[in-house]
Image 1: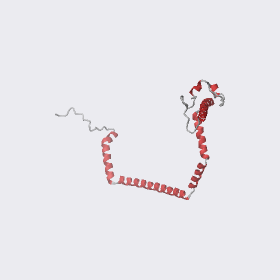
Image 2: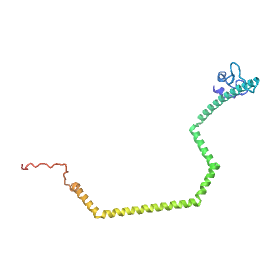
Image 3: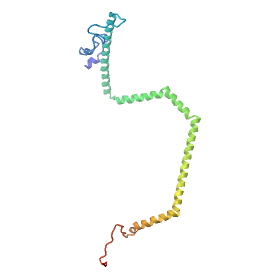
Image 4: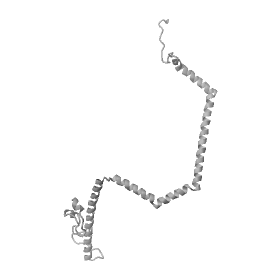
Length: 202
């Protein structure tokens, strides 16, 4: 099968390089042939119509033959690529790389690159860049000032009498809950019950 498919095809031969069984799919009378009586289109004689039908049949046979040859050649190409280690992924990568290279060398890309370069050197671009730089510097300075102001405000608040009073209350509560344990003494929790003394009077 592979040998017959790879043989050179003589398009002038009656079988066009096909086996006998492969001709069974080809319509013999053409697509427009009719078993009863052929219809003659208006404006043509019967001889002209028959000649066109014969030519159509030959063209359809040639198309079928060329499809068979193309299919065999594609199979052979795939086999050669497989033996060479060329995978579809490698071919895709090569095609993409070649396509990108073609884009980079195209007139449209070069023109766009030149336009972008011209824009980056223009006065409007430089002014915009300077404005954005100044705005960035002002924003960072404002944030720094605000951070300093917040720190100062927190320091002032911590030194205020209200905060000191609150801090003393928290310290007293902490001492009552944790402080005695820090000195080695056990402090009973509020849920603990005191042991009853044996000699307590009733």
